[in-house]
Amino acid sequence: MRPAARDRLARLAQPLLALWLTAATAAAQPGPVTVDVAAADDGPRITLGWPQPAHAVEVQLDQQTLWLRFDQPLGDAPLQTLPERLPAWIAGVRYGYDTLLIESRRPVRYTVTGTAGGVAITLAAMPLEEPAERPADNSGQGRIDHLRALALAQGGDLKEAQALLRQLSQGAPDDGALATDLARVTESLGDWRGALNGYAHAQTLAPESAGPARARLAREHGPHSRLQALVRDVDGADRQTITTASGRMLWGERGVAGVRAEDRHLSIDGVRRASGAVTAVDRHLGSAELWFGHDWPDGAETQLGMLVNPEGTGFRMSHRNGGWPEETELDAIYHRPYFDYVEGVADDGLQDRLAIAHRRPLGGLLHGSIGVSANRYWIAERRVANGGGLSGALHYGRTPGFLLSYTLDAEYLGHVITFAAPGGGRFRPLPVTDREVHAAGVSYGASGQRLHYGAGAGYAYDRMNDNGLFANLHLVYRLNANLELALQAGRSINANRGGGDTVREYGVSLVWRPAAPDAWGDS
Image (cartoon, rainbow, N blue to C red; front, side):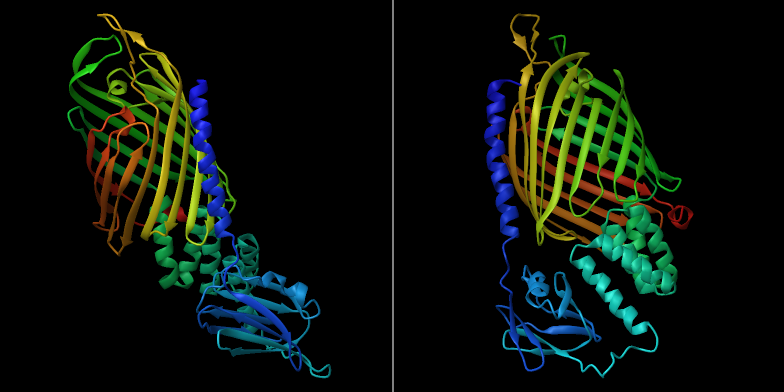
């Protein structure tokens, strides 16, 4: 990479890193909820105060456990300090978005009362001669343990919550709520295959809650076949018609495989070929990929793919780690057909790529990602450019619903090769350019029983090229239990080529899914 390109990359990385750290730091700042401890007649009194009045809307308790749900979020209230402040009384504290679980060191009487700005909790020691009352059966304790598991999950201790729910489910195999919550926690850990099997079992016990979740997960990850037709028009330039057939299947306990075949038709009056001549092109170009994957129990996923293109074969490898709530993904690609430029379609462009990206929540509804990449470009069997990329994103909101987004897509070229033109001079056979696209947008999505729709719009600013508005729309309609019809449309600026041409895309897809996921969901 040229020194100038390295300098630009470093200058851009510094503010992006600063933005990342600022967002993470802001998300970690203590919330406005206060936690005060004072002595009462029979024991300590814990008072939680909010800027606006708050109430405990659900209370579950016995002599050693208190579980509360509030109508206001707890934020970053310093509840974790309670065992240190009251070591003789409190053994442990767990809390989530709006729930709190307190475990005492000995049997106590909990009293929960309202205050002017929140909730007061009083702990009173039970007389030594008064034994702790326990239910004759385990139903009461089981309910407390179930709530404790949910509090663990809301507090981010998903693996501990999963272990507790699994233990409770073994003791109550006919409890549909336990089975459904176990599947939900398993899904949150990234193990969609284990969650799918969990929902399948829970659906036999609680079809009204587990059924929709199972169907959603089956649509996202289950086997399907897709046929898509897409038309891409660049004002004053080319038109491409792209037809794609793809499919996905599950095999064994953890295996997944897929295939994708594409036919791309290019029609353009004149384009400079790798030979230097400017000619009209009317060409069909085919490519395909066959890939196999493995889903790991911890939520990780590994894929290996073989790429077939007019210049021969390539490969693709990707690995996404498991874990929660952060995620890191590594991609390595060799000789992927590269059709972002019309010259690549005309003369068989290829790309090699090595990329790593990291995604994590930054607090509340804010999520972020950052990534780097190294790219190498080929055309007519010759390497013509190298580049380094930097990407980043901040998203605020949830889907379905409103989502505010900022994205960065930048690439800085290093070594670039030019070809000699027949009439003298030199030209770039693949006109890749430096780019630094900052985009801000808003989107909205919603789902119904048969219809899913979404739309988005925003503005993209390329510091090195042209700028413009972008917009997109998609609709998905379930024709029946097996078949879905999808429509899409979009408008953007052709910033990659260093120009301001408008790009319009229109597409239609048909997706077929098995009618009964039982055939593969429990494999």
